[in-house]
Image 1 (cartoon, rainbow, N blue to C red):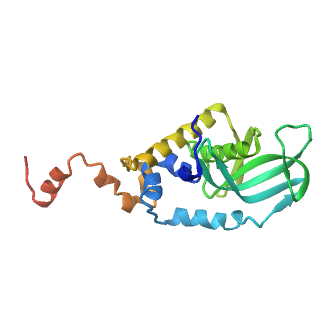
Image 2 (image 1 turned 180 degrees about the horizontal axis):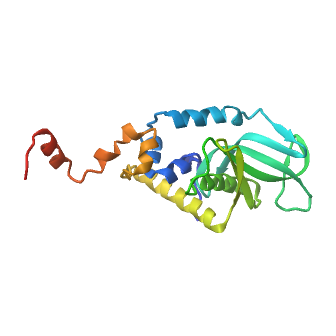
Length: 226
């Protein structure tokens, strides 16, 4: 297993960009390109309070911590997770953690906030699983479940961290590092998801997928035929 160092760690949030579109991830993290659209603005508004590290919430016996810094040297990822619930637990449980402000033993329960609704793929679950692996590595514990809160439907969806989901996290992380080392922009998909991408104009997926740009220019600009 590869153990990464501080010099080659990548942003944890990028794993969602990568799973959505490797080219989008590379434009952001290799080319340092970014454009906002209505969807990204909605996400920023949702996270305005969620990402406040000084805002702590107590609901009965459950404590919610926000904007937690996490990192994994086996994934080579670091970043900030939205929220971590602390559920009271027995001191006999080996998968508990402690907190300087709250005496006792606590079971961590990771939470991710999304402004939309559940997706047909597992992009959101993979991001949450990556955050969870970071927590597990930092504290030497195992976490079997978490949840994603979707603002559009005002509902929390439970996530079980299966071996298959964890494998997708490690696979995605390894591919991200490979692309980052190679410094090569992946080709575009030019598919339905490109329509809502905030980087559509920068990516130009239609032009980038042309098999013969010279032939296209001749036909469109000079009306040459073959």
